[in-house]
Structures are given as structure tokens and as C-alpha cells.
Image (cartoon, rainbow, N blue to C red):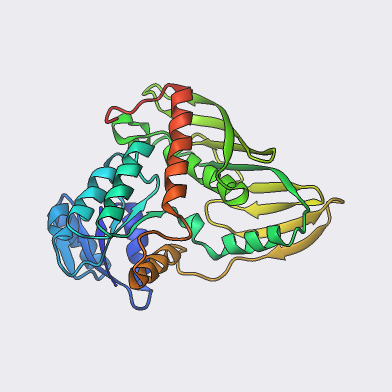
Amino acid sequence: MRLGILGAGNIARKMAATVREMENVEAYAIASRNLEKAREFAKDWDIRKAYGSYEEMVSDPDVDLVYVCTPHSFHYEHMMLALEHGKPVLSEKAFTVNAEQAKKVLQYGEEHKLLVAEAIWTRYLPMRLVLEQILERRVIGEPHSLTANLCYPIKGVKRLMDPELAGGALLDLGVYPINFAMMVFGNEIETIDSTCIKTDSGVDETNSITLTFKGGKMAMLHSSMLSTSDRRGVIFGSRGYIEFLNINNCEGINVYDKEYNLIETYKPFKNITGFEFQVEACKKALEDGELELKQMPHSEIVKVMEVMDTLRKQWSIHYPME
């Protein structure tokens, strides 16, 4: 499978480094709005084709899959560009700016029989399956609530402060605790309560979110671009609790009984960077003629965007491009 990378920022470099170590996948093309930047990127990562425009790359007949890793505000535009040129797409999170954009992209992909996927890598990591197996074995009994947080001191990153680029903590960081909660409790969310602190530019810098799910389950979530957090997810059950170390890239899982004794522990599998699992999922889906990935179905993509739309409505945050 020949991958075309649309965007040449930091996350593009991580994807290029990943694919370079994979078998049966090639980082074939890179596109930037600056041709010189694309050529330097291609040289650094042994990529065959460098393009100074996105349209040139998606017009290349040898590109099998387009990986979109531009700022959030451009995801819709760039996914549609790829799809309109007949290219399947894998887009970085947040998938789009809002649910309306997500639905349009997914509908276009389905109508034209093209794979559309979201690169929310935590959905594809093997440790997700380990967590699901622990929950299925009812080691902690019935899970009733969870907490999850993800905070990094990244307020100095310019795009995160810019409403024009759909900045703020929610779409960059908050999306991970939301996905974690939905991976544990499903997508039947009954109520959403939240609060946030805004930057002077009008985006959220710190937020607190409470989701209640069908069956009386509750998730308390937190994200911020001001501070460092422990990045933990903890699931509380009737007979114990599960500690998920780093919801952004699992570093281990610990299981405790109701007397607080550590009874099980799991270490993560060896991997290249963790990005390879979403690429492998796309490759398999293309080979099988699938239009969505089982790890992150289209219905889940839309639901996550709808949750974030509701949160921003509660906070009175509206992006200029909406």
C-alpha cells in the first residue's frame, strides 16, 4: 500500500517514521504547500514523491491512501479533496470541526465506495483489546464509573490558541478522554454536563466534563493545555478497579480488588510508534473492500463529534469557519 501524507508537520514525521519500519506499506508521497519543505521532508524520510500542492498529490494515480494531518480546521476540506479525486482517506483527530462536516465527508465516502477513517490511534492499540477482555471477565464486577484526564502544558503552541484553526484543548486533548469513556461505556450518552475556562482568544484552555450513560454509568473527564497531568484512566467497579496508565498511549494496566490489592498487571506490546495499527487496519479494509474500520466505525466518529459540538455549545465557543 502506497501512502500519501497530506501535511508536513510534526505528526506527519511520526507517521513517516512509522511507515518506514513497516512491511508491505510505503510512505510514497508527501505534500506541502511549500515545495521546498516537501522535498526536505521526502529526503529525510526516504519518500519517493514530493509535491508542492495537495491537489497534485491526490491526483497521483499511484497513491492508494491519503493520510490527512493538517490542522483541524482543514480536515474537512482536505478529506473532500482526496475523496473527490477517488482517494480513500485516513484523517487525524479531531476528525472534523463539527458533526455536520463529519456527516458530509462520511456520506460522500459511502456514496462513492471509498474508505474513510479517523486516525484516533488509541482505538487501534492492542491494549484496548486487553482492557476489553478484562472488563468481559468481570474481574472488577460491574463497572459503574470512570475518570480520565489528559493535560499537557502546550498553551504556547500557536495553532491551539487560534479560533481560525479550531484551537483549544477539547479537539486536541479532550477528544482522548471522551473516546476512552466511550470505549468503556459505549455511545448511549444520556446527559452531558461541563464547564471550561477560556483563553483571551476565546477557545477552551481547561475543561471538566461529566457524561452519564445508559444504565446509570458516569464518566468524569478533564483536559487542559496549561498543566501536566498523570494521563490516567480509572474504571471503578463493584469488586475493584482498573488503572489504565496513559490514555493517550497505554503504558500498562493494573487491576485491583476491593481491598485495594494489585491482582493483575499488563505491560504494553512492543510496537514501532503505535501508529502502525491504524495503518494496518486501513490496509486490511482496503483489501477487503470495506468503507469503514471496525475499531472506529462511522457511527462512533459522528457520536464523538456530536459530543464535542454539545460541549462547545455549552461553552459558547463557535469557530469562524462554522
